[in-house]
Length: 147
Image (cartoon, rainbow, N blue to C red; front, top):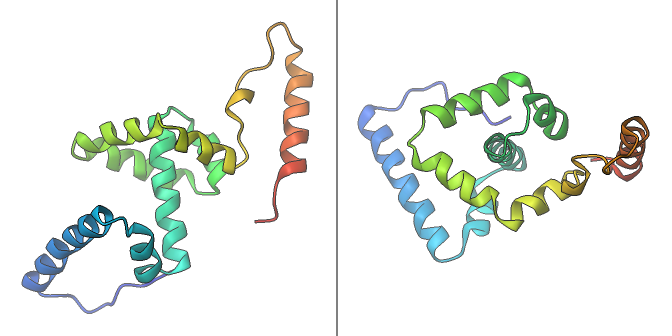
């Protein structure tokens, strides 16, 4: 995991870099270079950490349980709770935008990529729940990739 220097920045420097950061993000996104930005400035570990946090936020606004999120994303309950608290305490536009994006097809593609088929939420009408669940778990274990 990346480490932050133990040496504290002056308030002036801190405020300057954190005013430049969102401006830079905005410009890179506006010119369609968000992938270049991510690949240039973030390590693989940082990308994974940030991607998981964003995925947690999307899954929370979609109403998934902590246990489901923990299982699918391999994060702790504490991490899920912290992201949930951050969303609640954030500017109201943040959860609204998360909800808008979560409704798009890309979120369904994301769920499929992590091995969760949206169509498998409920067993077939009148079906045997026990065998449906057993088949679902069997399919999941057969289709899981090593990493």
